Image 1 (cartoon, rainbow, N blue to C red):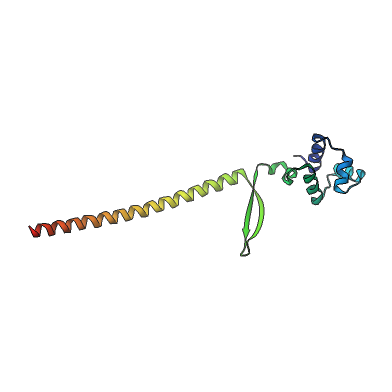
Image 2: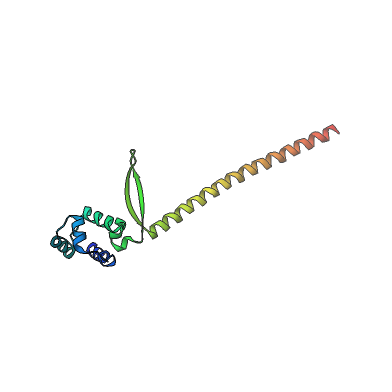
Length: 140
């Protein structure tokens, strides 16, 4: 798993950026920036500035095990506060599968209701047909 510092070093190398330039952009001295790289001690706001500097999403700096996770917003309470979390691909697949099962159950329920209405209609038509046949026989 790559650390934030390792990912910053990689961006510096890939983009051929001088550490002095990046240090100035985040408000560090060159020595302070080297120290933060060596100790992996970057504050979140500094990482945001670095992500903007290199035009990469802040998620680039998340631990690698979050790369296979999906961002999900959860609405909490009456005032619809939003909390963002990450869900693994297996959880997404499980929830999707469960959602599909619920949809299929709902469709089956609807079909059962339609089937019941159909049966009731057929029974009504049969009884009405019998009644009309009896009336026809009486009139003959």
